[in-house]
Image 1 (cartoon, rainbow over the protein chains, first blue to last red):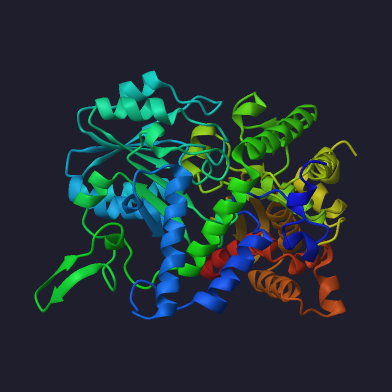
Image 2: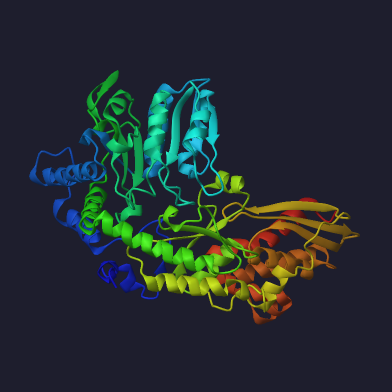
Length: 406
Length: 143
């Protein structure tokens, strides 16, 4: 098997030998290289970064700033000034809403949000619009999760300040044409905020080619520790934005009556930063680069197609979204007629198979699709054919276990 | 959780509920919701002369929440509100993993949910009907 060497890199599968982990869209497991890098940081390099004038603090600063450069390169940003470390994609989106939003959105303006957005790319805008008396509008997709350029053009008005959409939806798994959408937005004078939480871990990302104004993602969904995330923003925009949080290390000078703020990106990183997490994210990027996106995508596409085609053969199993496995990117959200998703997840759990059930933090989408909740299996490159085989064999028995066709 | 958790008692009450319907004669009703799961039921009781003479529920949710509500109604119909509260206490004790053999027998089919105690993620589902009953009875007295 081509990727057994990668699964062996993950300690969790040693600790929990029976585990079939298919909840990768929620969070990914961590390879040993990442765990060791975090431990090494705390063993050998830990001091308060960006502050101390002694050797250890310089090491800590290096670990942190080298990670920033690794991220810059990973998403092909122009400058490290465009890479802001946050806790996760949610915090990155909140940063944009609080900082850019509060300074630039006024009564009568419009914010357009894709209907399939995760709550973290909806609630900050909903709150902002309420606070400012702006209007929150939704761009709707079709049943397969597809958004069209025509629908976007029709939804944009001269008042639309922001358009917020995930590159890959955490429910559909469909890749949205962000590059095309960014161009349409810019023609309209609208900024585009792209949530990359589900795409950056799975496909090569180039922010310059995409043309987005903001891109957000979480480290923990791409092999890195929890608590480190990224906001990419175009320098010219970030530069004009007020700080988000106030505190240490984000200032130039402070007097009794005022302060001037630090240069990008430190302006947005108040307080002691998560240097250990950043070092872990750096190691995760190195790991992915070594594997290569070509191999990673090939592997994930192959497993997605295998699972998709087998699921299609099972009566009463309905896959949400596109009818082509290539439009799913490792995310297969489904329902089983007559079986509640929480019961589905419990039956899988009894077989040591971890999947997600519920509304996946996308309630407006579920209301739009008229399904109260769904189950979701999501895979990563370190899954293998055996994981899919076990998933399918349990899926086949679900209805019988719940008392149907007995 | 064991593989046979969804035994016949549970799946039967889920697929063929005895008390899942509207109740036009209801004297009181209350909605119970588990917001994290989306379980949502409305519990209806007809209380006459201090006796729960009839009861029903409507709504949707997982098999555990639905079967548990159905089994609960089977137990409390024909009882006084105080007796119903007593069953609720026993059910909560069972879920807490702190129930005697005799008490468990009193709970009849509701005993089929004993293993929920070992599934923290599902406790709320099993309790939904009972919690709704508790709120309904404490709000409406014996009315």
